[in-house]
Amino acid sequence: MDTRKNEFARLVAAARTHRLSRRALLRRAALAGLGAPAIAALLAACGPATTGTTAVTGGAPAGSAGSGVATSAATSARGHAGPLRLLWWEAPTILNPHLAPGTTDFDAARVVLEPLADFDVDGNLVPILAAEVPTAANGGLAADGKSVTWTLRPGVTWSDGQPFTARDVAFTYEYVSNPATAATTIGAYLDVAGVDIVDPQTVRVRFRSPSPGWFSAFCGTNGMILPAHVLQGFVGANSRNARFNLAPIGTGAFTVDSFVPGDSAHYSVNDRFREPDRPSFATVDLKGGGDATSAARAVIQLGEVDYAWNLRVPAPVLTAMVTPGSPGKLVVYPGSGVERILINLTDPNQTVDGERSHLGTPHPFQSILAVRQAYALAVDRGLMATRLYGPGGSATANVLVAPSAFVSKNTSWTYDPAAAGALLDQTGWAVGANGIRSRHGVPMTVTFQATVDQLHQQEQELVQSSFAQLGVHVTLKTIDAGVFFSSDPANADTAAHFYADLEMFTNGPTTPYPIDYMRSWYGAASNIAQRSNQWSGLNLERWQSSAYDAAYEQAKTELDPTTQARLFVSMNDLVVNDVVDIAEVARNGVSGAARTLRNLELSPWTSELWNLANWTRAS
Picture: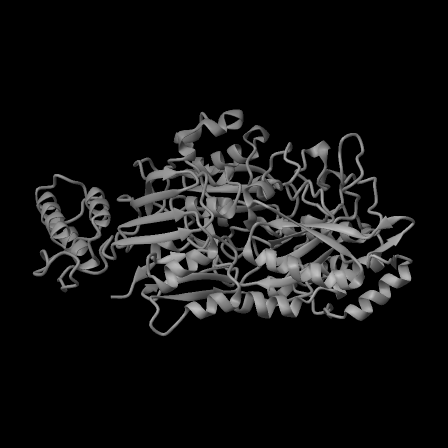
């Protein structure tokens, strides 16, 4: 306590003599472990802010630093809530969202960078860097669906003091659309024909054809705007060399103090942030690593962190942690993702010109519909949902579970091993003396791969046990998530290579018009994951359906909401009825938060940190 008390005294003196900036004071206070009352007093000692920060009145607390003694400082002042401690058990590796390989990287970038608009829990657009959401009524949306005009929020600056303008929006498109940049977000911009700078505060986005999903570009996690004045020399092949990738300049409420890829990111208040009374927190420490169970324990039982992401923990373990006296709680919000088993329709054991799972080599038995139907009957989705997920999900037959207007009511699932066995009997694959089915000397043995994850392994084991009763031998394979989801074309263990018979992961739409997600089953050759496209195609199952492709192509340009719903329902039903995938669990978002945190407003359509500027702590 004496150490904190002495540090508090030193910082008060520094504040009164202006030897340290407000930002430096907040950072030092957070590192010293000073409480919210002491930090509010430090802000007051600084005097009126000169960069848009709300002035604070009052002096140092009468008691020791962090003692909780009330002060007269206005609780609306920036940084009054002290440090915020975040735990992402999969650590971020980069802070440039347009080069980000995964969710955690988008999250870490979203603390600093912002899109034109983001999505609330219901999928409604919320203006961020835009002054308003474009509509037909305000003239923002063209009647033919081929352009959208954005008016930018006035008075916004980058954290280095440069003005934010329409040039930055246009530059972001130039950066992402350049093939040599190899942007991971390029899918959201494929339909964009160009971006016109109307004036410094207005941009017009033109589309190649009518675009019902016009908000895919420049909105949500795929839409974070980049500073032209910082990155203009790093478009294309030079994109990976920018210092910005690890230390971005942004318009958000915080700036990066330090970042260690694969470990941690540290942020402090952006003094130039446009809202003078926000953010409430002085600093943000985002720690990566560990596992979901230890993260849940850290936030719920121990109170070591304020917020922990994606608590993929078996339901009995997770719910047992929450007690009336625990410092943390579960935060459950609607999700859009589906945990699903993908069925390889090609042969992963046959090699054609050095390539396995080749489109021209049908799987010896999984290419038979009755076999896939038997698989679906042998997966106990209800048991998975209740035993393993609890509040984290519910059993489903659908691969598309959000938004609600596009969710099919035509499908259902049943767990019936006897019916599954009868279907397999009809195929001619008979059970042998070893208990494994075979036909013409080919055994019904499969490899089932998933990432290293406690829930995944328990799901795999349930499937393995159930399939064994049918005479299908299942070998389980686990792969590190960093390898499994890698885009490395030389890595044979990626999900896209799919050199196994079955694989499992969670996926779902990232915008309320889920056309990009439904591309997962589009059968054009360019979209089939294969060597010719460096396994960048999204169709991993190598399934092709002319009916599906026709519905997908129409949905890309359809502007009528009723017809849109019909098309998406039909695409879902085709995938489900042909058993291309076996949907298991419709996932909810489940994270952990200190009981004192407020204003989280979590959404399935964007980063959990999209609203971080508004987070605060109850007094």
